[in-house]
Length: 263
Image 1 (cartoon, rainbow, N blue to C red):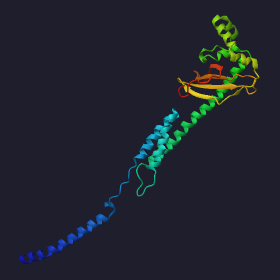
Image 2 (cartoon, rainbow, N blue to C red):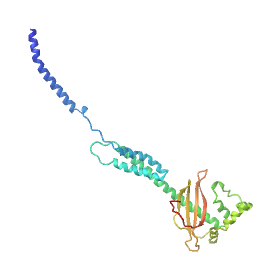
Image 3 (cartoon, rainbow, N blue to C red):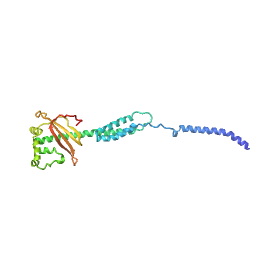
Image 4 (cartoon, rainbow, N blue to C red):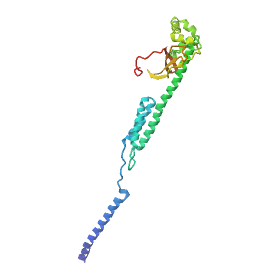
């Protein structure tokens, strides 16, 4: 009886093994075709997108320093490279490239327009200030015009009698005499307060030695005066936050002996 059972067991073992192999094969095929065991292709990495974002952040400094606009231009360039066409999955770095381009465009526009608006405003103020200076001299208010040649914190109050003050001190009175006899000031007085002066060329606004400066050049459109008058003015902000102009140099136009870039 025991021998018969052993023979039957021996005959069953090959079939059982075949079934086991077939089950394992099906299981392995299922593992290969099932979504849970597939290997997805990883998206490519575009480093230019991250460079674009970095330069876009740095382009903030173009608001403070106009030469820093190069960061905004570089960010846009790298961003366009990162956003080029692709096949397959979306490359990593394209989304940050879009953010970098938006930052660089925003900061770049501000960095370009803010200095331009400042230059237009300072040019208008400089022309108005220079016109008031000419009018004061033409009307004979030399003392008030001399106050405009001082820095704002050294100017005397307009309520006091400036004529008495300038005559009270021999040194100050001597400077007043020199001011009255200056060739440009005498020309302003000769032509009078209603004389017509026009800008000979656009006003030049420039930054030097920590200050904004303006160069204003006047000429006589009627031909009555042969002088072309050159004015240099300094712009500062006072303790109350108001802009203050100071007349620095007034002279007949002189040609520069060196280039503007050297100055």
